Image (cartoon, rainbow, N blue to C red; front, side, top):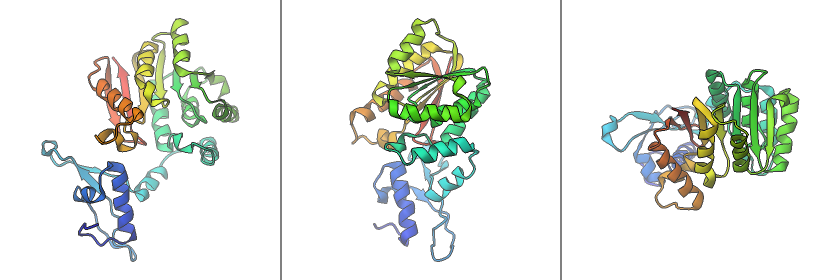
Length: 278
């Protein structure tokens, strides 16, 4: 690994982190990183903060910070996570598939969007054990309602237990089954354009279908948030062409040209695109 840096244990960690984030060979990454070097103890770049610069110089060499484990720990330490969410997160961490749970900083953003919108009617597609839906339910007013769509009964059982513990079960309408069918039933029941907010974190191959259905359910000015739009960096790698990556890549491309919504792709968690219905 010829990088021109003293590759001690700490510097290797930083480069590996950058490698994962950018999904490029490590040597290539290092060429595009700048390091703020400070000597702490015997680790010369323990506090190194790498940032990247777009390869297209027309972006003006704007420096964009790239998260290291230490910096991400700092971000997490500045999340106002309710105790009940912490308990759910820690229980889920012991379960199979725990990586599907949204991160605390993501959940905090979702809750804030709900509050900014003054949302009262929300939908979540893909509940898992309920971390994000619980965050949304806690942010809703007492009269608020969240339709939670999930097909896995085991994970849904955990979610419902925590809705009860948090005292928000009266706000959550659970739809057990295929999300697309649940959304279609809402439309058939005359609930079109009556929802303020929706969050999607489910089958990646169904993203376009979920989005089209939610556009019918969300009001003008309402928001739809799509999770995993960066898909571990695979969407930017032309050598990766599995079904899920292609689906998300195609969805992102279509969304860029979709005049029905205003969009903002946010590099939080595994990437989230916030869509506001026009």
